[in-house]
Image (tube, rainbow, N blue to C red; front, top):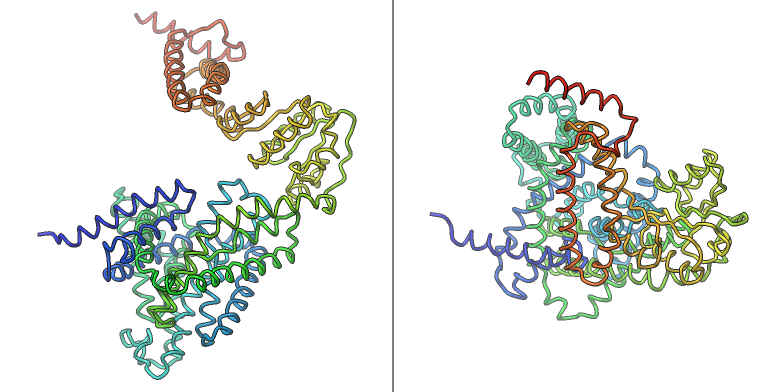
Length: 636
């Protein structure tokens, strides 16, 4: 018979996940906080549905951390690391080093032993990859200077997790010099009996074996498995690889995560990299979710209740120290125009990896139970505090910097008579600008990415560095007398801000805008911007037309279908806008009706082989179809 208690616990964990995580996402939080919230709710301090068994579940779920580091290794292509080496190892390396030293020094001042202070510094120096990447993606900041710098720092921090895992047992050994039986090496099969030089040779040999087998043997093995065309066998092989390496590392006294990370890096150039990642990912996600739920259930809220002001003080101190270090590094690496503040606010919280490292430190007895519980509280609250930091930057810091506009060294814009202003010269703006320039128009091009400006100037483009969300930049460009303002920026919220400002102050200026999607286009229409181009719409239709050709349509039929689709979208656009403005549910209903209507029309059109609107350029396709029709009639 099955174990009812086991299935009941599984039900509790799964139910907590499917309720709390989607709710957290709806509230704009990352999934990690959702899992922690689920653990807190089912833990002993709220509903009490789980108790001591949460720690046992956590030990099992820690294998998710091993899988996560294997996947991180797969994603770290050596070529990418080399290309980004300055920002990753320069900015990222200094951030971890300086922040660890500063936080460690503060921990020493609070009375912690040196080894524990070093551990606290290393753990709290890391920032949340999940929170920062979600924020960068949602706000469209991943490509700007602050976003790229933050990504480089996070990449280095992810790499540093493995060395920190290796350092923690060494730091913990200082707490157990009188009782070496507590150290990890004495749990091993005969390894502890070897002399130090022999232990070192075994470790080097094990790591070399992982690298050599991964480089020269694994691809033949995976090819043999892949030829079976059995997904479950490939999955079993992938898990066997990770579990085998983890056990081998544990047997020689190293962190299992270190071995799987190295294996991941070695396999990063393999042709089976993406299949391995896709195979491991579901197990990694499920076990990591289980791990974070267990962490949430084990958080000791009695510590917070005993002295809430001290805990909040620690959180604020941590955020302040990290912010100041990051701000100084941002200035040192020449992040300007307010990007240094955004960079610092983005990374000022602690990391989800901290939960892993704190748990590992507890197991190795680096921290006492109370210290570990205190660190868990500080990490959790700092992550929850992160959205408030970004809100403070948007609402308080950015407006203050905007008022210092006259002190910032933007390019002096030479405004011709009745200028055409193109704001944003990335992938989209580059196509727009080149077309206008090729037709002999003088265009005032402004871009807010200094690296982009520098590169494009080398190609002969005359463009200016500036932020068009600042009124002074627009005025210097001659917005008051401009023929056109073309908003081709990738920062969608900023484009709406510019459109709103120009509409209020210069209502007669014609504005053309790039929109992310139909909803973004509606926002522009709401601001009386009448010419809006959805960035992916036309290219999507062109690819769709080519797909129709490959599916048997003649070229003129595919072209006609795509053109009809486009005209239909343009015809119903304003009607849908009216529904979107007044009644969202009616908007959805009408969208479905129009889609069905379009489908019926296009299906009906297929019955007409030759149409009066067909284009003469596709004579060959028409001839081929006519010849096929005649041949068919002759056969009948």
